[in-house]
Amino acid sequence: MKPDIFQAIADPTRRAILTLIAIKALTPNAMAEKFDMSRQAVSKHIKVLNECGLIRPEQSGREIHYHFNAHKMQEFDNWLAQFRQSWETQFNQLDQLLSTIKEQNTK
Amino acid sequence: MNNDLLFDFNVDKTAKTVYITREFNAGQSLVWDAFTKAELLDQWGAPAPMHAKTKYMNFEIGGRRFYAMISPDGQERWAVQEFTSITPKTNFKMYNAFADKDENRELPGSEWDYNFSELNGITKVEITIFNESFERLEKLLEGFKTGFTITLKNLEALLATLP
Image (cartoon, rainbow over all chains, first blue to last red; front, top):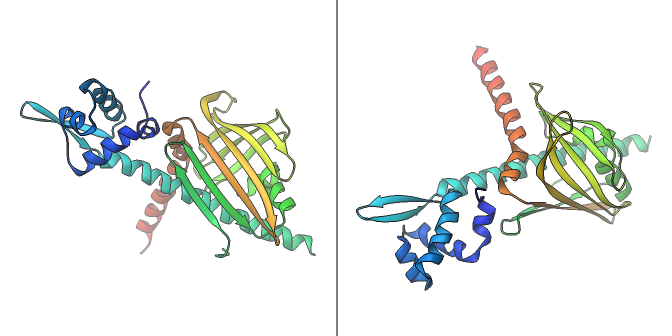
């Protein structure tokens, strides 16, 4: 099953990788070095991040650099803003309903 | 809208949880009713221009609410809520899942926890929503987005006809 963003960012190492990549695209070797991790371990993290779309590979000569996909995070943030907005709207509607009921009860 | 009432909305992405807190200018009993009675829920339970319609609801432990959010063009998004815990006036928990019009559920769903408390005539409602997957969270908004997009298109069309 394809991993989703939550799973991807649930892991602290992956969050750290994303932070680094956001500053500058990195090759898997560079990542392994920075985290003092084996190439294998890094590859597992890269796989998860790549599959959920948070990073994307770009061939540069013989090496692959992974870039941060800001659009994906932006998608999530946009979705969140809309979700929050719809709750806000519903609660405002509830405010009005409560006010109406209270008024009726005092008549 | 009363700007003094608290509205807090936080997302803990790693815990896959959304935390919502909102205060209402009404007594706890009335606010409790607004969240647990179908005839009241249907009056505020979907953001305009959508509206909510409950097909049936029995608010008891093990009971369910089967309802839809309907967009202006008539599209229906059905969902089933199963009530797993009820402490009258102060707390209830339910498991929410999307479904088709024949009540076939699409899992996984999400776990919702509601807490009610009152201070000086203001009732605070705290809602915790735990989702197993991000895609599932996205689906929550699918219906809304469709509704809004269509409404905006209608508006555009209308504006185009005005002199």
